[in-house]
Amino acid sequence: MALVTSRSNRVRAVALAVLVGTTAIPVAADAQNAQALAQAREEFRKGIAAEAAGDWEGALTVFKGVAQVKSTPQVRFHIAQCEEKTGDFVQALGSYRLALYEAEQSKTADVQSASKAALAALEPRIPKLTLTRGAGAEVAKVVLDDRELGPNSVGSPMSVNPGGHHVVASAPGRETVTIDVTLAEKETKSVEIALPESTAESPGSVGPAKPSVSSSPDQDKPTPPPGTSPVKIAGFVVGGVGIAGLAVGGIFFGMKQSAISDLDAACGPDRKSCPADLASTRDHGETYSTVSTAAFIGGAAALAVGVTLVIAAPRRKAAQVGVSASPSGVVVGGRF
Image (cartoon, rainbow, N blue to C red; front, side):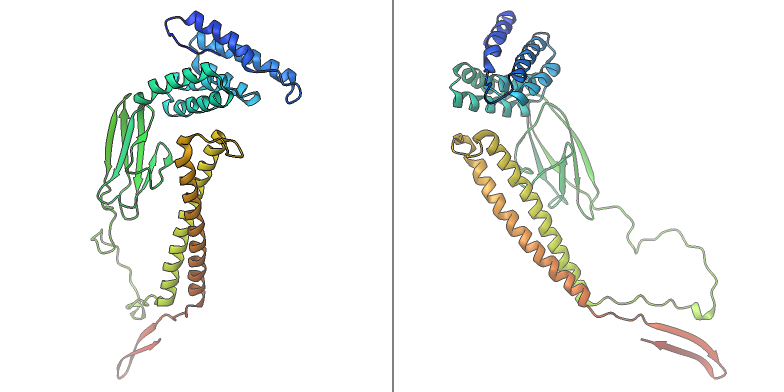
């Protein structure tokens, strides 16, 4: 594996990478197929060659394939290095941290020092984007680069890759707004999201005149629309609250699962050797679990009550009105 301590000496770095990489994937005939491991060593050398040629995308693909057979701190470091070179700073940051953690667990000193140096150099280069809620966007759904942001992300600085980013914000009764923002390395930028009121025509607005339609005297007065029971209205409201509760529960359940995946990746299944900087991830995961459970229970209960009210609501018959002529005058009849 190449631990590049001096970028001015590429030949030496590549030679060291091949030498260390050959021993970085040990023979484990009892645990894994020896032929697969031999192929992984050969693929590792191909990845080193691709790095030396500047083909970082190709090298990244190769190293990810090697990691599927045998993941080592050296392989993780090379994956992070390729991600950084291809401009995926945010992903590279996580891969460097994982390489450092695995190196500490296996007491691989050279990977530890190289990972720490890479993290110290990369972190200051990562841009920070803060999206804040302005007028009309208090409850808006905010999507950044096709990924919906959670409630804790909006209003807080987020690490993003250098380059262009696409923001879409929407809310009921408001115009959908799209914002394109570009950040350079080390740049910090804040963008306020404001949603104007929808310009769609209201029911009382003046529009083009409709053509007149001739009708008989009995059609002069339209039949009034049937009324809606207050019980049914209450059912719809309560049911809507229930659906919203289930949606919130789903969001926090997804956040909980993400925290679990991070802990499993860094701490192992037993989670007895978690690094100290992952304590907040564990605490957040417990909070997400509690909130998602409560939201699911409350949402399901409210939805059940709403459906019951809608079904049990009494139905109203539409009023019917008729007009006819008689020798003594006009007769108006109706049924309610």
